[in-house]
Amino acid sequence: MKSRVTKAVFPVAGLGTRFLPATKAMPKELLPIIDKPIVQYAVEEAVAAGITELIFVTGRNKRAVGDHFDANLELEAQLIAKGKTELRDMVRNIVPEGVACIFLRQPEPLGLGHAVLCAEPAVGDNPFVVLLADDLMQGETLPTTSLLRAFARKPQTVLSVSEVAPEDVSKYGILRAGVEDADGLITVEGIVEKPKPEDAPSRLASFGRYVFTPEVFTLLRGLAPGAGGEIQLADAIDHLARQGKVAAITNPSRRYDCGSKFGYLTAIVDHAIADPTYRDAFAALLRERLADLDKG
Image 1 (spheres, one colour):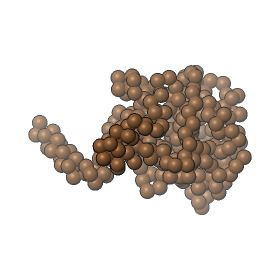
Image 2: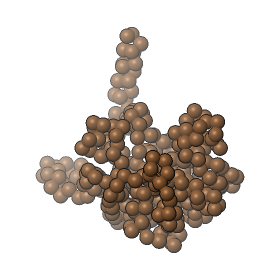
Image 3: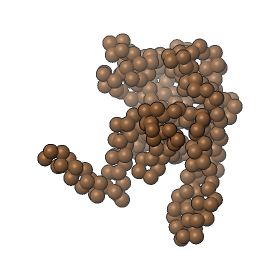
Image 4: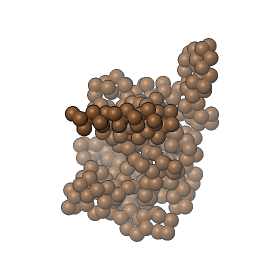
């Protein structure tokens, strides 16, 4: 097994039912945050961390994801003909030179664990990072960079985690956490999927960024279906944790749950406010709308 992580897996086969009818024909991963699709943020995070192989696990009706990251020579030619060189460069450089895209199919929607297992032919005997595009991250340091730094210190499964409110623990996989070392690496003794608040072993929740060693594939192949009749990635992580092979680090960035409508709206608002092109006009619009509500 190599010690350097160069491969990233993006499970993008989900149906996106919470965003119907918008996702009837368009993959939810291509829903835009202003002018950039959600999945592109995850790809840029991976590339910034040094990843050079992007492995997309797709499903039915997800061809558009591949099209987004592929060349579009006709569009580029039209942009050049109209003198729109900057737009041409933006389209051309969605995937930087030296970064490869690989697309694999998940034949049936059998869960996140199964989707990760579908990536095995492209991952091989190498460590890899998994990024869930629904979890959009914003900050100076993003979790994939932090995960790979932690993995370089100690090659094992590492989770990105954040503390959640007591009333929210039933939404996530919650850690049975051990000690934290001087570098911020937390020992993980187990993970409980969506516990009741009174049964939660902590308030540390695992979100959509993970780095794995290839042994996770062996575990996933042997797992019986879990919750919802699906192969659960959390079950494989729990098995590894019970063997003392899992650690966690605190997510250094802000997370937006773009799998929910309110989280998606929040991401759009915050990105608009942070963008100097839109900030002033958008802030003025928000103030105007809030004033209208107060009057109303």
